[in-house]
Length: 422
Image (spheres, helix red, strand yellow):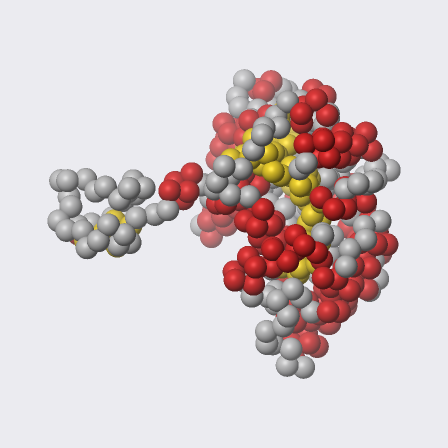
């Protein structure tokens, strides 16, 4: 059997087509054992997640018995704290295995409301919170609720790999705001204003940033807020790495800024700060009138986040928080190991990340671009990294590496990269 992509109008190649049941029929019977599926046009514009592809490649090599180190993903190397697991386990064995309120259990939504008030200075009603199966679910439900064909979405480049595909799925166009690596990816009002179009509806902001590790300053936050207010934009603030900051940097929430609460949706989750990636729990918080519309997408697509996992999330927010600092201290140490080692490689320059757990290194001095270096490293050094172009054209000459790994793995990965690139 062979799968062939057909045009959006459903036209089939004459030399293989035997019969077409109807113009709208999804499965078309063709001669020679071919079966063609008529996919939606937007599917042809999408590629699988590059970061997931790196991790999948690493897993394939490991299954073949090859010793390979994965620096491509964003999975904390620490176990979920025991008190969180116990809370979920108790709920599981107590029979909490059924549907719950689509927006999330009341106890968790209240805990999130209190967390936003205490940690972020953001005031929201519990009716303005939806608990989702992962941060991605929160983001794509929000995108689908707010933009469609004819709308533009502004993203800061470099930025997370899934923002543009989410806009594409919604039928919207992504407009990239390129940031200069030589200027430490500083966000300016002029850069945003120059890329706003009459069709721009959303501006997506991520701080601390994946992939660059930048933490936005108050001046940059002010620039974003000024542009959003002047151009009447909704801001999506992706704050999933908010707890992971270094060197005295401070995370600032956009929804807490003057005049921004009514035009900001705060997206966050439990994956990074609580080492709960596999639990798939996130949330979106914002104005009740917007959240009500997002609820329509959420309820029709996922119904609700996992019931007993939500009990674990309550324990995460209301229980001890000291382990977060312990994880950040370990990542801080590994950050230095990785950056110092990379900067010893001829032709490679890597600035020190201010937050998150990624290093974004410029490899243009090697004479190769990020994609070529990534391919070389997986094949020769057996180290999986993500080519920078996955995060936008502004980082095409870069590679991104996660240092959310043990000291030993980071040290060995750096040694292998030094050997391969020297």
